[in-house]
Image (cartoon, rainbow over all chains, first blue to last red; front, side, top):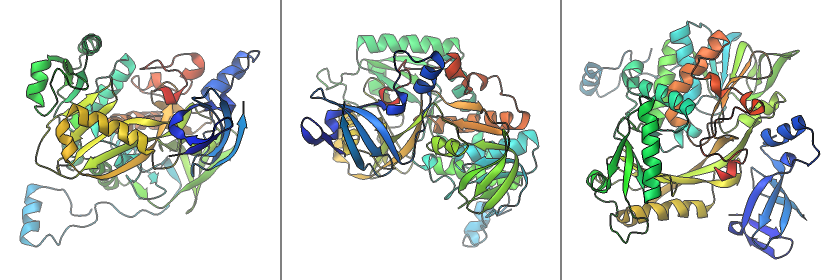
Length: 79
Length: 420
């Protein structure tokens, strides 16, 4: 189980969080269609550190830098 | 090779001689390129592909490269369920093609894969569930695939240990059964295909990890490995779970995210369930192995991970559901739980097709349902690698479908693997 540091609540159990998507898949409102398609439908899917967006049940959204092999969380940025 | 053709007579001879005459079932291969086709990944799908390439297409020089030992990844980690009762017609055709191959597989390979068509039962827990199952059954029958909608009494007769009480946590109203579905011995599938492929001259090279691709412009001409460079006419990726990593070595980004899926097994007991019990409303499934252990699983972990271990909370979910459905399970001790890395594709369906690079092909994105497709996937991928064009059954599963808007989305979750 992960313990994820919520910027608002502090360390909380993973079960209180939902993984939303990887940062590279965020589509901006004025993105060209091909850019949006690429963002939605392709992933680096790294066997290592990647950047992800999660949400906490308190309402706080956060950007995690997390290693997908070891689960180590190296950075948390509130969104 | 090895002990030659396996037969009852051979077993008898072994019994008289203390079983001393059994040789290796396949050679320990070493890189000996160039090859016509190099397959990356020595799981069930890769070995099956090699076998059908040699047998059906007469390709002479084939190598299967495996970074560890064959069948050590998802082939040996699944819950061994085989069925073809999907909802989307493209998936129905694909899985039914595979199911037909399962029914003759032990004879085909001269290797007992212990395929046991014991029936695969979806439970219905409400009127809405039963309406959904009836609709699926009709769709299957229209496609020529067997499906029986059965009532509550028939379910109770089929699996008497299910909690059929009206006050059960998840009351059971009936079910939809595919009687030709069932289970198979997962390891034996890898070993059987390996032995049969080896007999046809395929080099199965273990402890050989691919580290990159040899390129000439836009063409892939082979692979670099921990055991040297290997030249190939065509190269096939077949590493579901790690498709992103291997395709990444060629600079490709796929519509795939790696997620963890767990499974569990109890101590072996006398026969207590002789069919596969599944609930799609809950997402829990279990069956009894031929050894007697109850094997089950549930949802993936809902976030990306390459670690072959999962979160206890998901394990608890599937076990609590299984116990609620069949209370007698609570008396059994769990002896093991484990996890595999699944290639979660962005429409929930596999990808079998060419890549943007010439000479490089992809078979992956099997989500949590690859084992049942092993024979069909191998045969269809072999067709693609031998001819350069997709078989009509595999054609809808090309990589280009995502950009073209032709996704085959069984649950309609879109590019969000954690919602599948």
